[in-house]
Image: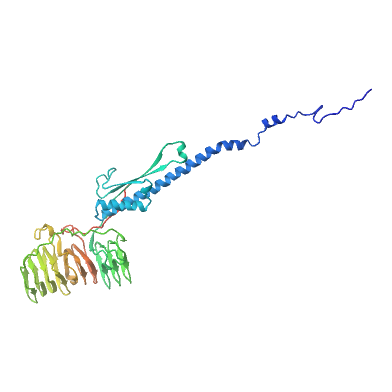
Length: 435
């Protein structure tokens, strides 16, 4: 028996497993498939992320452009509130837009319409409409769209009427203490006080003054010092627009020839009644009884001085020119009323009690009549200081408008002007974005 030694190759013979070749192994290998998928998907993912970032850029540009349009509309409306022309308002709107990001060098466009040409404020001359546009080149989104994308912004600002009335207004636009209330005084006004001065102490309340008013407004700042107390109904507001002189359009009476060249002086025990006309030597009451008949009294170049006695007059208006001034001192009883309907002084002077020539300057007008001084109507000194010194008890409509106004004594003024023929100064209002 011949025995053979059977040699086997590894993996052959009974029980051995079949192993494929290298090609088969490569074709069946699934390792690294995710890398292939990722490589194919990556451009799509990057594209979506890029479009998302680009859309975010659009929204960011929209917000910036809208802020610039809002600022432009508000700036233009403030100029209109101040009484400036449409061209000035348009220029201010453009400047505000530039400060807030508008750039014409990159193709931005801006249109300012006064009044607006669309929307609910069409034809409103106090409203300012601003339309802004910016074209952006497409980036990733150019795969899906052609051309540029246009970002629009639209804003309208208009005047917001303020409520309330003023009975004290100072017109000087730079004076310190343009309205001054100081000392041991108690000033109670059924109305507001306002200053057109831009000074840091445009309204200056000092000492131990007690001031009770409805409003205090100023272009500049309001200061309350010492132990003073300021009590308001509606609060204080600074940085407001200038209040237009409400009586700037009132025509000045023509003085004409002097009807009375010498001083009219009333002394103790005398009773004098005067008629309307031009008085060139001044009028003085030192202790008698002085009565003014209804009409217009023109004082040219001298004083209207009340230093005692009683002085009365109804439906009267006093026009002061040639640097004439008013000096009303203590220990005198004064009761003067403006014409509420113009029947005796003319329609132009309805409600005007004292009216100073705007070209006069330098003289201080003092109203120091004590508790028995009643002055009803407008007291208007646009270019001279106006001082209320001492107590003033008034039971009707009293409006004080001066270049500057000061209170150095107690005062109690009312602004019940509906039947007095007087239009008191009004708050300047403000501007706000519509919608």
